[in-house]
Length: 216
Ligand code: AMP
Image (cartoon, rainbow, N blue to C red; front, side, top):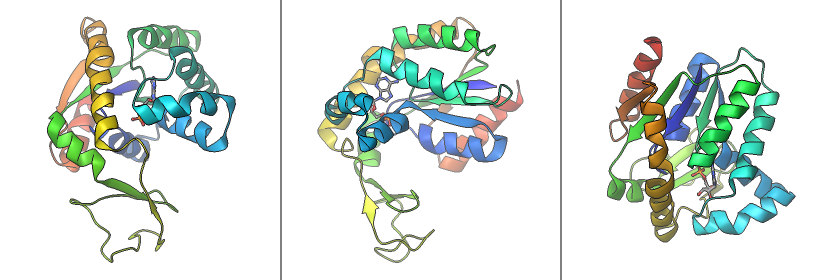
C-alpha cells in the first residue's frame, strides 16, 4: 500500500500517519520532517529551505522530490509508504508517479482530510511538543496533566514550530488552496480518492481511515 494523506496544515496528517505506522507497519514519509531535520543539521538543503519554511512558502519541487526518492530507496520493497505533506504541487505529483514507477510501486489511496480553516488556525497556533520525546500537546485542548512536565517521558522542555504562528499559517493555507488542492482531480479521475472529516475526534478519523484501507 502506498498512500497520500492530503489536507491543509494542521489537518492531522502527521498524527494519523503516525497511527498508521503503529498499526500497519507502514513508513511515514514527511517532507516537512525531513526538511526540519535538514535545517537543524545545517545541510545545504536545510540552508536553502530555512527562510522559505519560516515564511510559510513552498520549498522547491526538485529538493522535496529528491528527498522522497532517497527515503524510498532505503525502504524494503514490501513496506507500505504514507506520503505526508507530499506531493504539494502538480510537478511534485508528476514526479511522484515517476519515482514510484521506477521502484515498482503504485499509489493505492489518496485520503483527503477535510477541515474548517479557521478552526485549524486555532489548532495549529496552540500546538507544542515535548522537546525530549516529541509527544504533542495543545494550549487549549491537551495540556500535560502536571503543568510543565511531559506525561510520557517526564521531560520539562517543550518546543513550538517557528512556522506555527498565525501569519505563517494563513500563508501555508493559501499555498494549500492554490497549489495543492488542484492536484486532487488527477487522483479523483483514477477513483482512488477518499474524503474523511478531519474535524472529527482523532480516534474517529483513524477509524475512518482504517475502514478505507480495509476496503482495498
Ligand atoms: P509541514 O510539516 O508538512 O507542514 O511542512 C512544513 C514546511 O516545509 C512547509 O510550510 C513548506 O515550507 C515545507 N514543505 C514541506 N513539504 C513540502 C513539499 N512537499 N513541497 C514544498 N515545501 C514543503
